[in-house]
Length: 434
Image 1: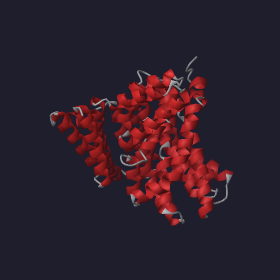
Image 2 (image 1 turned 120 degrees about the vertical axis):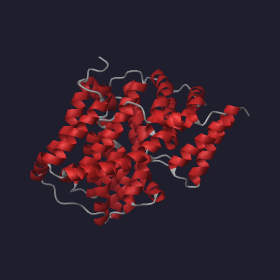
Image 3 (image 1 turned 180 degrees about the vertical axis):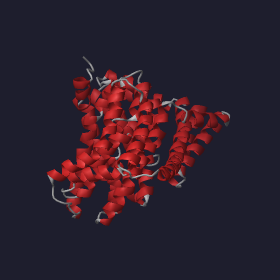
Image 4 (image 1 turned 90 degrees about the horizontal axis):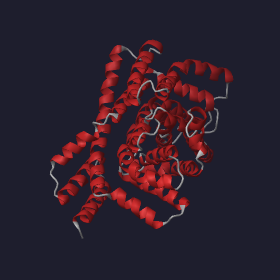
């Protein structure tokens, strides 16, 4: 057995053992990477270098801004307005609060662009609300974390910016436009799953539908929804980058929260920033340790070996497309989203284009695959956040999420084999492919 093979085995086996022993995820990722570096004979300074490198990316600067924006909106009353608007739209259905959760995530995701921010902000409001109305706590948490992935597809999404960079200059504006229909498709799929479960468990309905109330809530929520217009139009129009749009979004949400909705005082703003530091510390530790793990995988050419295995397995485009999804899903189980995009895109994108998958379409597929990975152990950051916010054991949440995994995989297959779901709006509004 050569040194590289031994290092791969040490990395993966030690990681799985520590996860089985319930090590904190950051420790499991960091320690397994440390053991791998020891086997390769690399210096310990590599750990510090890769941790710093992992959180020093310009694109990742958007993450703290979007999380800060989400915290400001959650504390400033904006989340409440979006929840009220969602309730006016779908609250009358069977399992109404589950439907409200899903639709509110679509609205909020279009503002924050972060599944973590969505789960932390909306989850802290909706999960207790659902439990008080008779919904099971694990079901409430499962709905919250799965619907939060809509925010990865609906603009603004900083992960699409990372993909655009990794893919060699794909249009960020086209990617943003490509996310709207898949995000809506995911929302509809989750709503169907929630409806079936709600019928079986006899969860309650909300108030009757009122068009007057819908118009009223839309008017109230206009200032919150306007953030999407400002950010998306600015990026699509080429006025500023995604990171700059995130900074503008923070300022906008601050103004709306303090001066328009008046849900925050300046003293309250400082308290929100303190909460942001706590959330950011968790997120940045996960990103930095995942960067070491990704570095080990890259130096050992694990993604390259996997890609060669895929190509050597078959030349059938349908099977290859399924295998591409499978490898991304597996990577999503052991790595964080940003490292997967950075590592796997240069390797898997040429394979995807060789079987007729458009780069924009593959970007949407990758983001959804990675989004599912955020909900799966052992490195599911959103799964951990949802478990903490809902105060439910992770094992219980995973079990309750199984039906929603099926809904998400169905959407993934539709996006894989029906490219118009992703490419219709970029071609219609962005002139893509003309």
